Image (cartoon, rainbow, N blue to C red; front, top):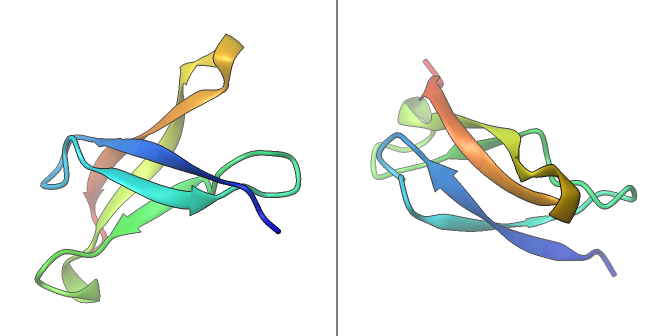
Length: 68
């Protein structure tokens, strides 16, 4: 069974929300998250993974812009 973690979204329209993602076999979350809002996949926003605290393996997803 895969482990999961909640990760905070920073920036964009989903700022302050958290998403639950599964960790890979190395204990890391996916490198990107596509946040799908009310406009559907065509208006998704892309968030990229970054370390919030390297020593404690805490992450956050930082908004990079629209998927268009």
